[in-house]
Structures are given as C-alpha cells and as structure tokens.
Length: 126
Image 1 (cartoon, rainbow, N blue to C red):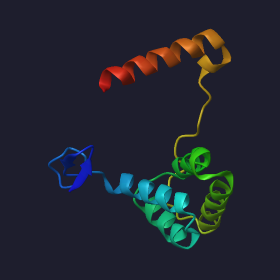
Image 2: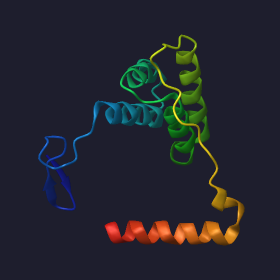
Image 3: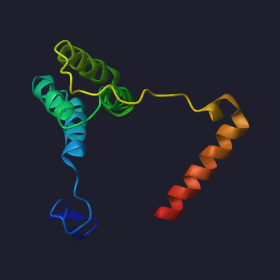
C-alpha cells in the first residue's frame, strides 16, 4: 500500500490499473539509479532493461532529459555507462526510433498552438 494525500492506494497489485510492464520497470529502474548516481548498479540494470525491450534511444533520451532534475554530471555519467554497455552490444537490443525535431518548432506560432493544445488535453485528463 502507498499513501498519497491521505488516500491509501494499491500500486502494482493488478487492482489499481497501475501495473507496469517488465519493459517499463526496466526503464524506471535505470532512471532511478541514474538519479541516485549509483553507477555500479546502473550498468547491469541497463543490460537488463535492454534485454526487456527498452531501446537504446529510449535510454539515451531518458538519461539526457533527466539532467534537468538530477544534474548534468549524473546525466553524463549515465550516458557513459550506456556507452560502456553498448561496447558489447547484443543483436537483440533494438536501436529504437530516433528523435525527430517536430516541424512545428520551426514556426513560433505553430509551436505555441501545439503547446496550448497539449496543455488543454492534459488538463482535461486530470
């Protein structure tokens, strides 16, 4: 049981609708260890995540984006661990879809409109 704002929630027991896949758990574990700066445990966890279907590009993106929350040194260190793991890249590990800059970003008005649309959608979901 987890308590949030005084409410008791069951997370991960299959009844809350919040059960994560093995792939999602692998990505989350990598993000947690990166945030903690635990490079020793991060290396085998990156391997396990890749074996569970997390793509190389997803890990690159996660480690790159988390710098804003964990600090640039931890981000760089995690990317270094990923590089080290990839020295012995397994054939089943997927590169994944490369990041592509949205065309809307090239036009300030379109970028703003897209942002407003996304925020509105997210607010309605709450």
